[in-house]
Image 1 (cartoon, one colour):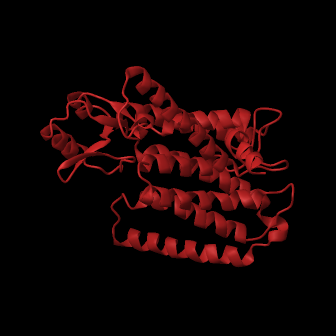
Image 2 (cartoon, rainbow, N blue to C red):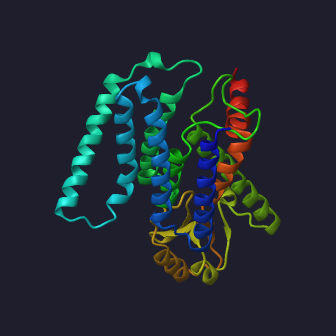
Length: 307
């Protein structure tokens, strides 16, 4: 394994470990964690491109500039910019769009061979970032820190590497881009949470119609719920108390707790504000040693079933 891969791994472990600890304690992770991680990842990526761009063309730099602009766009809006700074940033955004178009018209697909997927890896970075933007704005429960963590990982570890001699991949010669593998493995780890909750509720006797909620939450005393990192799965709609399958992360929980209290609900069903960065951190480490567990345990069995 190259020393650069080890450095990338260490940066990612430190960043995600610190982010996981903050997420567990406060459910908030400051932007500085991802900004510093993103800067280090950007510098390493610039170094990589500087070594190989002559074999491809200037469009590799164009892709890199557009990618970095897309990443830092998620942070710049949170800072107060004066008029000149706003103009510079707006110009950078327009330049990033121009660079994206330049890359699309200059990219030569023949440069992607069976054993050289470097360009695919570089394209996968902004593609994953765009998916994270979409997931944040339209997803039911994911938070901004979760999205930024995944985006930062795509900069820190854009290329495949492994500490093991043989690593699981989705295909014989080449698997999915490495950041996607980390993301998919984190979802696989996340799947154990509903299974664990179901067993817990069955043991506790928390079995009520419509039953689906046993996979997503549990029952908790209302006073305790108000002071915990949880959302109400039971909500008052009109004059009725209903069970919801997915709770929006922007829900006004305090208002909902008060409505339930007025309805006399003392032990409502709740769902935990699970710090997603923790399974993401585990996935980051596990992927480096075992590879694409998601494809090996989910995709391939499903594929063989339908074939």
